[in-house]
Amino acid sequence: MTSVSSTLATTSTSKLITLAAGCFWGVEKVFRKQFGGKGLIDIKVGYANGIPTIGNVNYEKVCSGSTEFVEAVQLSYEPENLQLEAILDIFFRMHDPTTVNSQGPDKGTQYRSAIMTHDDKDNKVAWEIKQKMQAEWYPGHQIVTIIEPIKVWHDAENYHQQYLAKNPGGYDCPTHFIRTKPKA
Image (cartoon, rainbow, N blue to C red; front, side, top):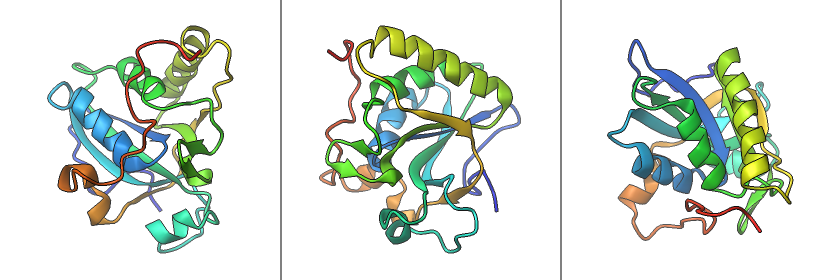
């Protein structure tokens, strides 16, 4: 059992963060667009923090809702060029973190909003950014994003990796865009 993608490119100085914000196709697309060439080393889509004893985790099992796994992205980034605060700012603005187990038409625990940290320092930063975003961007709505350590990670099937780049007309969740003003 692992908490890091075996196919994620890293360096000796890179850091990792695992994020869930609805359908992983759109989440991956937004982060690649925002941070490609700006400190993002790599990003993989997969399934995180479900029931650890479930074997052969795959899309069909996760979509059944019985595994407790969440569709997520795992990012490796150079902290010299890209700070966690900037990643989390986009995370909180690229989906609606006030909806429980859903994003737009996508419903189920696999679409919950979550930040899965890889160390205690990043966990502390995540809580600070969540409080800041609550006050500034979602003052009349409760952010329900879960913050917890990463425990389990399974890479999604190869056809899910960079899905929207390979399939430009594929399903893109309507909630995945960068908000420019606070939620009314």
